Amino acid sequence: MKRFVPFAFVLSFVLSGMPAVAQQNLSIDAFVGIWSGGGVAENEDSAYFQTTVRDFDVTIRRSGAGFQIDWTTVIRRGGAPDRPKIRKRKSTKTLTPSGTGGVFRGARNGDPLTGEELCWAYIKGSTLSLFLMTIDRDGTYTLQQYDRELRGSGMFLTFTSHSDGDRQRVVKGRLIKTGG
Image (cartoon, helix red, strand yellow):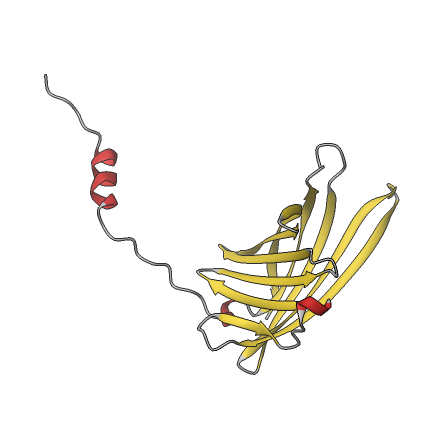
């Protein structure tokens, strides 16, 4: 009896033996612009507590050989439906090349062991990842990671906050480019 082997199976077998083509890292110029959007934040306890809705504004611009990134997050949580409690957080970071392609260091990095913030970023493929780390007096640390991935016509944000290795919060959202 003759066996029929689907073409897709044969093609996948042939392609699996071929070397993978490495995705080229974008330059910071691909991320430059004004981006706006929104998303949802979830805590580890989100099954028991409400999630929060957030609005995002991000501006990325060249600064010398590096870049400056400004972001604003508007958090709506609790309060009356017609008057929700609103908090606004703003941050600005300037990053300079580290000497290694696609890796940047915070221009105002401090010593994390004295409670000051350590900031760095890198580009891998189509994702710009920015990290903020602080260490408390007792040696515990907080690490925040902002992954901004360019995909299709937008930017996808995944923010993750860790405290001493335990994930505390994840925020996911989508932004569109609204200005150059």
